[in-house]
Amino acid sequence: MSTKERDLILLATDLQSSSVGLTKQQLKERVEARTGTIPSTRTLDRWLASLSVLGMEIDYTLSEQEHWNTKVYKLKSLPSGLLHLDEDERSSLERYLANPNVDTNTDKIVRQAISKVLATQDEPLSKTILHKTQELIEQTGYSGNIQPRITIDETQIAIIEKAIQLQQKITFRYKTQTSKRATQTTTLPLGLLFGRFGYLVCLGMSEKPIIYRLDLLQDVKETDKVGVRPLTFNFKKWCAESFGIFHGDKLINVVIEFSPKVSERASKITFHPSQKMKLWRDKTLRLSLRCKGWREIIYEVLHPDYLGEIKIIEPQELKDEFKDYIKKCERVIS
Image 1 (tube, rainbow, N blue to C red):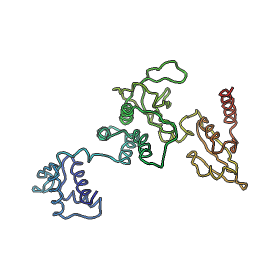
Image 2: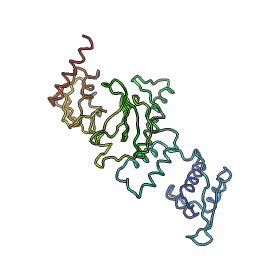
Image 3: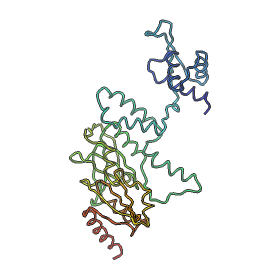
Image 4: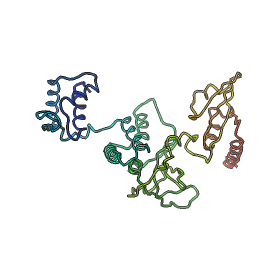
């Protein structure tokens, strides 16, 4: 994109962003804040004329607040392509909507406006996360994807993301591993998790989060019921507490050691936000962390990269769970 094209697009965005329009002085101030330089009145006139040539209808009125002969310019309609948000911009708006600290009456109209802007985007953020990497891999001859993948219903994802942003309840059918058939559920979605598969986090009983696998959801529909997120619940903090997707009921202190044979490889990995590493003189690496849930720690202990070269130091609860897991694994070959 040339500098001229960029300037015209930003000017059009400035004009469209104000419901009452902007004077030339205000436009100059916008450009100065963005670039550090002030365009001349002649340059501004040339830009406005160029927008008209491109088919953008510009209207002007005499300002009631400024001097009586001051013109206020406004763009009547902005082409939809100029409203496209990049991933960082969209993510920032979604974080704003998800922040409970701004959920006040004075922000209600602002939140509705942002939700409408997000609804005009080409695809949900979660779809971008799930598919962009795969698209890049498919277009590149020297890369491939070897991990299992799930099929996501894009229509359902759009409904879920909209409900998260607007704090509206959704209804869907879901079949657990232990149930014989899918049951109908109406709940408030809190957020999305992405690991080996994609997961939806909802508000469960006693205001505790409950996790559903995205590919197992059926007949997702929006409702007109508004939900209330617990004031003490922080989604990002909650995610950081667990080792992986699955949460336990209490925080546990975990200590494991990697043998000198694999310690260098393990030292390059961020296993958990709370982790602390210490390298002993014999090159043994001790990893300490504090998290909820042991399930995926067991998977990590059994990873082929360091299978047989890792030792669980504590807690005893994790050792016992690991022994039980191994017994269940023996049934695979019995």
